[in-house]
Image (cartoon, rainbow, N blue to C red; front, side):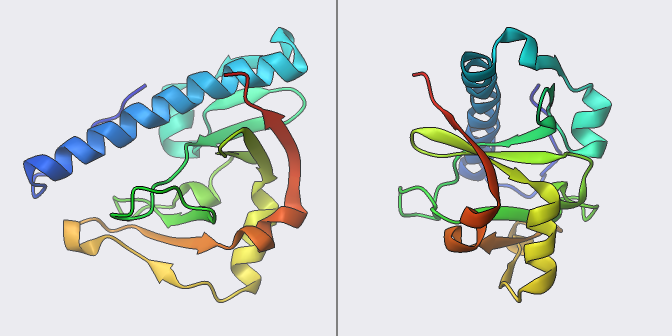
Amino acid sequence: MIIMLNFTNLKPNQMKKFQECEERGEAAHIQFVQDYCAKYGVFAYQSKASDSDDIHNHFDLITYPHGNIDVKSRRYLKRRGEYATDYIFEIKNVKGEKGWGYGMADNIAYEQEDCWHVVSLQGLQKLVAENNYEQHDRSQYDRDDLFVWIPASDVQPIIIDSIPKTT
C-alpha cells in the first residue's frame, strides 16, 4: 500500500525522491514476506496488517512466531549514495504524531544487504530511553518529524533473529 501525504512545499525533485522511497518500502515488504516464508514456511506469515493498523498502529504484517512486524527498507545516507549501517528509530512522524518507534509492533525488521534483522521494539525503545542519541528532523521540508540513528553496535545485542534474503 502506498500512502500519499500532502507535501505542498516539496519541489518536483523532492516529490520524486519521496515517491521512490515509498516504492522501495513496498518492494521491501514483498521481499520480506518471501524471505520470511522461505525460512519459517508459508503458514508463518499470517496476514498483512489492515490499512488502519499500518497507518495508526505502525505495523505491516502479522506473523508467527514474531507477532506484529513493521518492515523497514534500507536507508540511504544523505547525498552519499551508500546505505546507512546504523538503525533508524522514529520518535514522531512527519505529521508530528507518535512515530512507529512507539507503535504497536512487537518487532521491527530492518533490511540489510543480505538479510533482515528482526529487533524487539521494546529493546529499541529501551536503547532510546537510556542513551542520548542525537535527534534529527526534516523541518526544512515542513515536516514535523523526529528520529534518531541508533549505532549498529548498540543494536547487535538485541537482534532476535536474522532472516536470509532469498534473492
